[in-house]
Length: 457
View 1 (tube, rainbow, N blue to C red):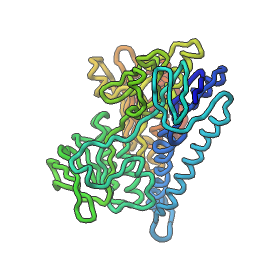
View 2: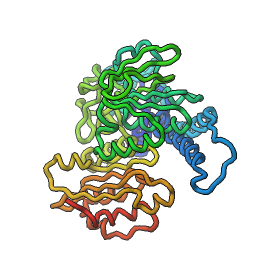
View 3: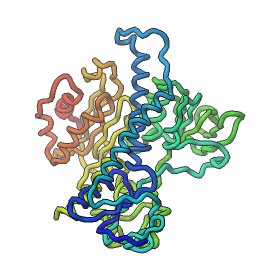
């Protein structure tokens, strides 16, 4: 069967559905294709389920600390992992069903469920149907990278996706990878009650951050009883009776770690290897990401790539911004570009890390003269009052232009407080604009003007 539309959208992640909405509202007919779960990574295996689990873990952690706040709890705090999973599944299902209902209610939008593959630059086959359109938008996301470690083919392992299906507590969870995904699962499962070890090949956790951020998170994990092994140069896996032995060859500590379960959290790869992109002539880079320009156009006119598969961002907010860029350029006569956005993201451990712009190290590497303002969370009243004084706040400013170059807030409310800095940067305002603002007391954000008034070379 042959069908013709004005546009094809492949993938119902964070960019695809709103783009279908804009296109259909503009009078176009749209074929939206999804081979698995509506909502993409964020709704099904990323933000929504993990942050729901983190919320359960935080409740367990705070319940165990109740006495610190003068609150009595009878008996030990227990965690019912089946109930935790049921809550997570319910939250995810609500979001996923909401996305699907929205799409199916769109006028001029036809839903195809199945695996889409290009057969030419204008034609896509899905099942027995050949669909043709002059505009095609790729929004296929990514999946966990499974590294070619020695022994990986001989032992069971978990990824971020299969980890979400557990309804029991691992006795000892060993996480290979000391970056964002691995750290969130590490703290989460330690608070649920598992023994947890994080193994990182590099010399420190989350190496893309400044060393003081890495050190603060390492201290936080030490305090919560999470073991961390860095400088693991030769990671290998093998069976050891009922456990898995993970060889690490670290310079300090035992040469191997025994765990009941292993989670691989070493990165992501794009879902571009089975789309038939070669049939369409769409260029990929050496890692499999779709090559796009500043307006997210691929090497083939009439084909765009949005979201995680284009290598321009690995976050829900960047995927959604990809939609905004494409819609603005295509439908609004605007001229928006990927480079217009400022890098920002969060690490949702507790307390969270909010990040925007350049790190201190990156700013210094540019050769600019910079000024730094910082304050430990132990000197932030809001944090002390809540009994959550881990971490610090740091802002990096160009000493000549007075432009804010970047910031990190590792501390209670850091994922929210960072937005005041982000908005100032987006407005291209001097740091003095933010310094002179009057913020509400008692909040974390109220210390940002204070920090900006204490900048040092």
